[in-house]
Amino acid sequence: MTLIKSISGIRGTIGGKPGEALTPIDVVKFTAAFGSFIKQRSGINRIVVGRDARISGEMVRNLVVGTLQSIGMDVIDLGLSTTPTVEIAVPGERAGGGIILTASHNPAQWNALKLLNGEGEFINDEEGKQVLEMAENFEFSFADVESLGQVLYDDTYLQKHIDQVLALELVDVEAVRKANFNIAVDAVNSTGGIFVPALLEALGVTNIHKIHCLPDGHFAHNPEPLAENLTDLSALVIEQGADLGIAVDPDVDRLCFVMEDGKMFGEEYTLVAVSDYVLRHTPGDTVSNLSSTRALRDVTIQQGSVYHAAAVGEVNVVTKMKEVNAVIGGEGNGGVIYPAIHYGRDALAGIALFLTHLAKSGKRISELRATYPPYFMSKNKITLTPGLDVDQLLAAMQQRYRETPHSTIDGLKIDFEEGWVHLRKSNTEPIIRVYSEGPTPDRAEALAGKVMEEIRAIVG
Image (cartoon, rainbow, N blue to C red):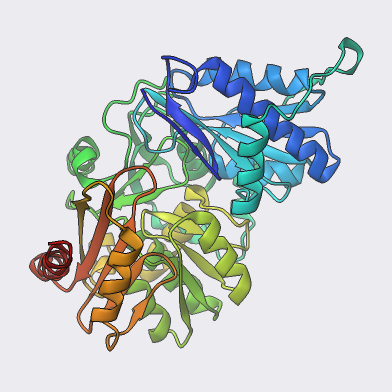
């Protein structure tokens, strides 16, 4: 069983012993600490809670809501929701913070508490450390019976979220309606099965073919939206003669597409395509993390704008986006962050912008994909020997490549002319993650292999 405590929240597998998995005791402890932190920091005793559809969701929700009440916090319970919907609801309700109950792309045995500040954005490093310290030291107290919090159930944010998406200046509902798209949807039996078809209908799409859209939490396949997990969607696209397929993860903040021939558009290219459309109409800077495709940089430069790289992690991307006033940004895992609606990965906003782009291009989705620079990514890892000084190892590699463009804001990223290699130390496993990208799959593997051999030589 696993329990991972990090600055962005707490996640783990359900069941087991306290402190070793995500048990009721751990849920109560960290919820009480976060609620107390929000009350102390903001002076607001109101928190928004929403959850994805995983099997443990109702149980964890009951613990979280009851704990917040027990420390005198009022709760606005959105019920089955999405991560971006909760992010919108927090400032919408003038709440002090939010808790999203989702383990994102992790399998069904996992769940998590993701923590938001009063702006509806993930808490930062300093805040996260403070919450963890409060939890470990039990720095909270419970309210007397006259001061218990109240619960308000609010199921209106599905429509409010969709309304905000439709109101975006770059979303053209009429263009999407006229395109008469035939679309297949795979929502891995979570809340995307509610939210994605509702958005498509609001956009005027009438031909919708749903698979794995019953929000009962019984994931029909590994919930990470990768090619190997989307074979059912690919088959459905071909069977129905669909123009495209749409897949989201359980909490609807990651987005990828299947082309009309059943092949993947590529989750790395979700952000590239949406950014291309946004930049055509709103010149400005873009941001992605260091492990995302170089294609975003290429498209940004082509549009006469400036690309910036951030450390891996949504909070780091958002921080950089605010710093440079970026008009679009996100992560290569299919996470689109569009500040015009809010600073968080939002698959619903991504869908609406992408369909507008596709409709106005007059192209099939495979033809649109062919307009973007072709890159291929390889993901490897090196298992570390006990006692190895990883920081010293990365410093040695930096010295080796001192004459080659590189970045040390998050591990070490080496930029070659034809591609790149990114080395990152894992915070949860004794490994170094080795991500690489090149113009062909073989070149991506070769770049990674070259650097990995050099690391092995240094280690001996």
